[in-house]
Image (cartoon, rainbow, N blue to C red; front, top):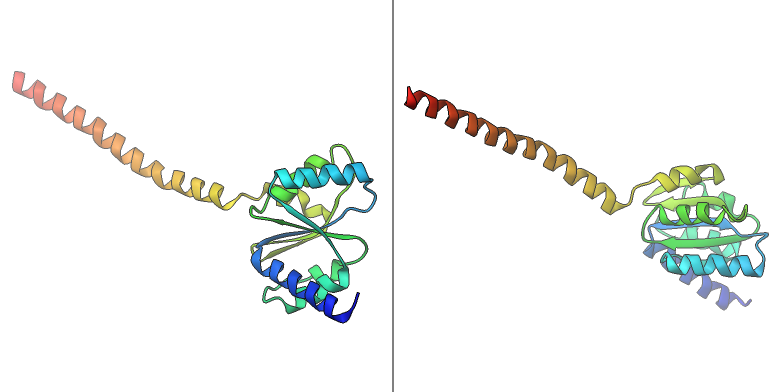
Amino acid sequence: MTREEKSLVIDNLTAQLAENNVIYVADLTGLNAQETTALRRACFKANIKLAVVKNTLLSKAMEASEKEFGELPSILKGNTSLMYAEVGNVPAKLIKEFRKKSDKPILKGAYVDAAVFIGDSQLDALAALKSKNEVIGDIIGLLQSPAKNVVSALKSGGGKLAGIIKTLSEK
């Protein structure tokens, strides 16, 4: 690879890192061709972009990026693949689902909305993350709950008041 080609790859990786807020770094070593194809298909169905990258080029792209990747450059050893997604927990769920058939892929680390996760032990925490839409739905539900209670209390209180007035008027 010439210097110009490497520079172009680094620029492309830097652009990809800037565009995406959900980036998973995984190790696919040990997957055969059939398993790799199955993983790529599962990623495509889940709207996840999967790319195999060179560690040195990715490290340089992370340095050139405006984002703070923390300790992620230190884990770039061996076979490295990037998974880009729009929702923070989708790649983790896909990896957990894929591991039911195989012990691979192994999660090296992840960058999710400025939070850095290092190591395969973080997979369960990442899978449990709620998406932005789920959090918004929870907040709206919490905000609507007191309003519904007030409305129902007013309705029931109005019925009691009308009943008392009717009883008094009949006497």
